[in-house]
Length: 463
Image 1 (cartoon, rainbow, N blue to C red):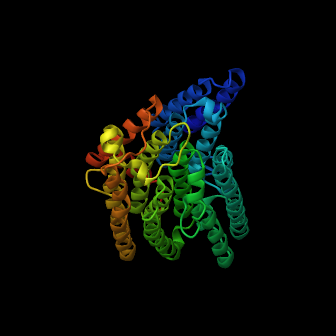
Image 2 (cartoon, rainbow, N blue to C red):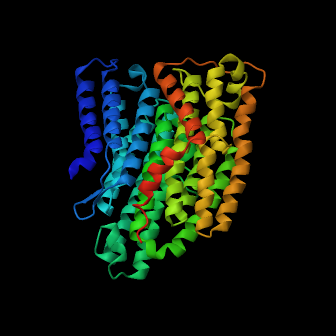
Image 3 (cartoon, helix red, strand yellow):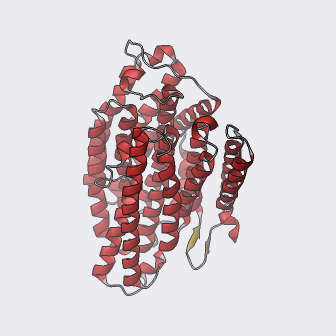
C-alpha cells in the first residue's frame, strides 16, 4: 500500500541524487539541475498513474485523489522554479536540492492526516525557502531572508502551540479523531485558532500577510515564483484537510470568520496592488488578494467550495508563473528591478513576451475564455451553495477592483516608450509557453481538470 507515497519517495531520492551530483561536478555544471528536473518529472508521471486510495499508519497518511492533486500542483511549481533558475553560475549547485526539498514539504502537507506530519511538512517547506529567499546577495535579499525567517519562526511556534492545545483537548493527534472524542470546548477553540494563524500566515491571508511584498521583492525571481504557487498549494491543502476532517461539526462559526477574512483579503489586497509600480510588489499584493479567493472556497465548508478552492489553485498558479517568467526575462542576469515603465513598448519590441504577459493579466483579472474566469465562477458558486451571499458579493467587488490592477500593466505594454528588453532562455521559453497554453486551454475546455478536482474533493468533507 506504500505505492501512494511513490511520487514523494521519487522526489526525496531526487534530492539525494542532486546533492551527490552537486558535490561531484564542477560548480558551474548544470548536472544538478538536470537531476532535479528529471526526478521531478518522474514523480509527476508516477502521480498521474495513481488511482486507488489508501490510509496508512492509523490515518496519519491519507493517500487519495486529494493528495494526488496537491502533489501534481506542487511538482509543476518545482519544475517551473528549476527552469526559471537554470543558471548554475548565478544560483549555485545547491539550488535544485533546496527547491525540491521545499516541494516535498508541500506534498507532505497534502497527505498529512495528523498534526505531527502536518508540522513536519510545514517545516520541510519553510526551512529551504528561508535559505533561498536570502540567496540574493543584496540588501533586499538579506531583508527578505531575515523577515521570512523571523515571521516564519513565530508562525511555526504559534501553530505548534495550537497543536499542543488540540492534543490536550482531544488526546489525539489525528484529524478525524477531533470530532469523535470528548473535548474541552474552550481549549479546542483556542487550539484551532492558533493552528489557523500558522496556516493563514503561509497562505498570506490578512492580517498575517505583511511579509509578502518585501519577501517577494527581495527573493530571486524563481524562488518568488515557487513561493507564489507552491507555498499556497501546501498551505491551502493542509488548511482544507484539517477543517474538513477535524472540525466539520463546528463549521458554522469558523466558516463565517474565514469568509470575513477572505473578503478583507480579496478587496484590500487588490486595492493596495493598484498603486504599486514595481512589478514584483504588484504581483505580491495580487497574490495576497488571490489567497483570499482560495479562502472563499475553504470558508464555504462544503464539497462545492472544496472543488472551487482546489480548481482555482491551478489557474492562479499558471497565471502567476507566467507573470513571474516575464519578470525573470526582463530583469536579465543582473536582476534589475522591473517596473511598470519597463513594460513600455513591449508589445512592439517582443510581441510573444507581451502575449504571454497579456494572458497572465487577463486570467488574473477573471476575463472569459481564460482559466481565471472559470475559477472565479466556481468560487462564487461555492459561496452561494453555502448561503454566504456577502462573501460572493465581496468576491465580485474584489474582481472589479482587480480589473484596474491588471489592466495597468497591459496599458503600459502598448504605450510608446523604451522599456526593458529581455533574452529568452530554453527554460523561460518552456515555462512561458506551457503556462500560457495551459491557461487558455483550461479557460476553453476545463472539463479534464474539473473532473480530477471533483474526484479529489470527495475526500475532503466527511458526511
